[in-house]
Image 1 (cartoon, rainbow, N blue to C red):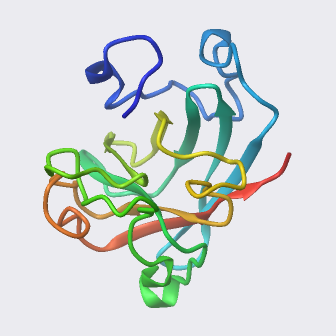
Image 2: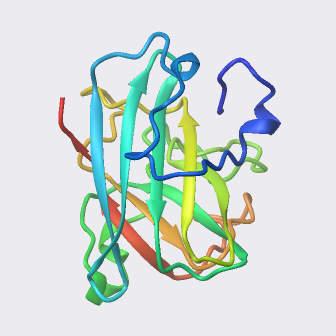
Length: 184
């Protein structure tokens, strides 16, 4: 599902050394990029902003770059696009609904009829408690289409996705949520 011309196993986790806004995307990743871009502000369980992200439409899919603070350190966290663009902290972000699955696939990379378009690899949060990541999701678009994600949410869960349990990978509670807004 994730490709940039290098083995997909190498793309399951792609950390960057700086915030997406502080570090430009390498030219080789955006050779055929379109002008579509989106922003996201992640909220924590107390409703305060704890991170930001930039999503860029490329010829190969949507590049998701994010930096999110105040997460549980030294562990893997599930990282998914959800079906609704509603992030209410007082409800544990349940208002974001389930995973984005416009084609009706099962959840998880290990499911026979998976994965959801919104499924993305687990992300490791180091001792600092700050996630810095880049992920290319080739199953979604920023365009107005069936698999378009403008107005949907990205949710970070308390635990790792097991890539097979239905409907959401047994990833636990929701720690952070941000709504995707296409800006150009």
